Length: 433
Image (cartoon, rainbow, N blue to C red; front, side, top):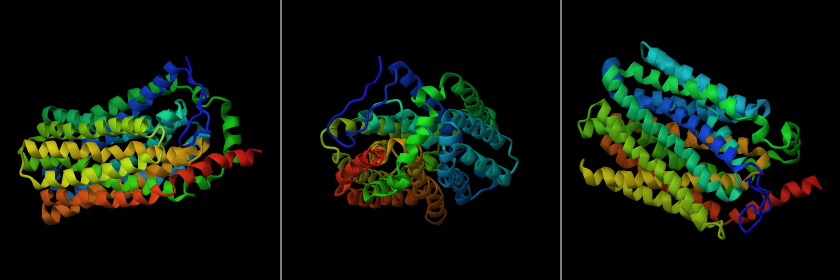
């Protein structure tokens, strides 16, 4: 059974869906999703051993935040050029090479003897992971119909949350039993095994039907200006990045929050924080599914949902972190993180609908650039700076206010979204004539 081109109401109805066998499409999703899990296991295992590194090397919270932020910074800076290279060199080979690099660098983290060596290893983790998210989601969207874009974007990006859960949970448990160096080693081994398997089962010619030559010809007909050529797509990049400032900061600092305010050791703190991150992963998937269901006949409604997710997460997280440690606080934090991650699906679908299929790899590189430079890179670092000055508890109360700015940016996109989508759909037809 294969997917066949369809047309219908809504954003981008004129674009044909790919004809790819259903079982193979899901195999591509599963393997690409698995590598994304490895990506975030390697990235977030560090958070589980923050208390151990802080004690062993006498580090400040700002230094710890920088070890996390440098990965996101490199992802933000390099995602665009490396995604362009991947489009030309081959996405499958590029994804496998990226996984080998970040896994080897993660192993280097486990061998580090001081803060400087750890910083260099984390720098290389960021280089390896730089273009994986943008190229990976482009691969996934290339084999599925467009009506599933919010669901697939949310589900795929939820791999980052599930990887964070495994990285912190397993990393904390391994560190408690064998020491923090073995925690990095375990994550590295998982990534290397998947990197070897991926190019064996996922073939370039099957994820790009029609051949590389047709793809390149299509790219020549489609202008790159659609990447940033409308208010709506720029708002999608910026709004998503600002919202991830909140989610990224709490993913990094929840193990330390559990350690300091719930008196948990590294193992229990990692597991406790993993549950909070799991709520984020569930939010990405379920909120994306809700978006596709509610917005099938009213595509502009996805922006209203993104705004609602931003405002709801700000309210729940601000109240939650203001409460005393206990069950009520954890419930509100989990609920807030569920909504905080909910914007991923709508924002990703906006980017896909507002740019041409032939430049989706580059479009999602731009999306990743905004997510990292505005959110994942500064969020953990600035939270650490606030924690050094005011304490981690107060820092966590202030961070959710950034969601208000994200909501305002999404509001700017609402008035012009449908007009911008229609212009993108019409443009390639005019140029091909």
